[in-house]
Image (cartoon, rainbow, N blue to C red; front, side, top):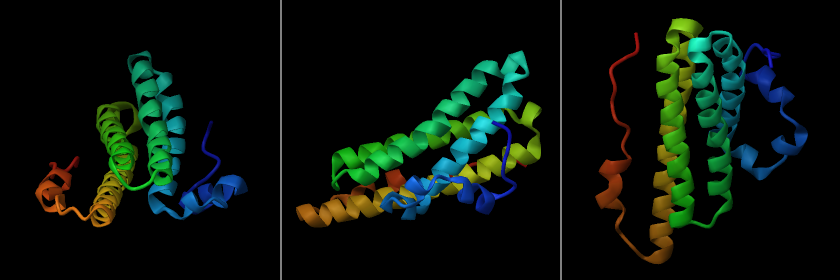
Length: 163
């Protein structure tokens, strides 16, 4: 799968109408996850060409691919623990993909790795925001106020710049 697009807008035009027509498509988080998944698939071709990175290529594709799966699942569930668990799984996959991009800088190059890491950092922030939103909605529906205690657990952890 070599790149048949030069930017996000070109990529979006190639997404089948059946996906773009779904309500889930309105969720920026979902679109971002699918975009990252396609980029990881393309990047894996470069990685697989070097035997040292062949297994990492598979891990990268797996973590990037399940992002959209978990987000779609979470979006489809009613507010509550199962929905939050789906978003937490997406968060874990995004962080794994980001870590893998850090590892493959020597073969993909710094600018590619930085681009993908930045996309994933934004997706992580969006996922955390979605989780907070779902926590709040669930708490309101259940008449609970446990969210304040969990706020510190859902905040983005700062990391040193990859530069």
